[in-house]
Image (cartoon, one colour):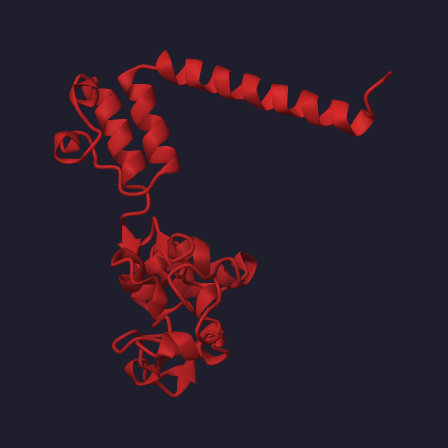
Amino acid sequence: MKRPRRQVDRSARSKLLVLMGVVALSALACTTPEQKLWWKVTFFDGVPPPGHEAQAEGFGEEEQQMTPAAKALAALKAAKHEISRHGPYAQKKCSQCHASEYSNKLKAKPPELCYGCHEVESFPGKYRHGPFRAGLCLACHDPHSSPNKKLLLAKREELCLTCHDATTYVRIDEHIAKNGSDCLGCHRPHAGERPKMLRKGVVVQ
């Protein structure tokens, strides 16, 4: 008598999962210290950079025996989100923004949630940047961490050019002279008292 197909499928799936687990454990057992640390920094937060491993539980001699190049690579990977972190996220105070420590639900919608800490009055100016005026904080900023300063979603000039067309940009003499070196050298990012949110002292002909 043949077993029902569904029962056969479950049995085969279980065997496949067990086999995959054995293969994964075997692979981990054969990895070098460099590979082990790479896996740690790729999948886990808070892995200490090379040179500080002995201070953390679970790190010992094998990481300390890594080559200088491997240590440098692992340190870069471990610090890939360390350039800027949102205060509550860095302090693990998730419930400051979320309904609870274990919930993805926010206590309020942006920008009201953002303005609970970042006062809108701290960005004064008659002229306002479109996303700021619309309350779209997350159009430019990551709420948790970023490899860029100020939690920006991309490098400053790259971020500006996602909305401000580069073909329009090059028609302006002052932009050509600057060669796209620094948008924020002339413009304020949120609001300003001058048209185009130009900073004080910037002369436009």
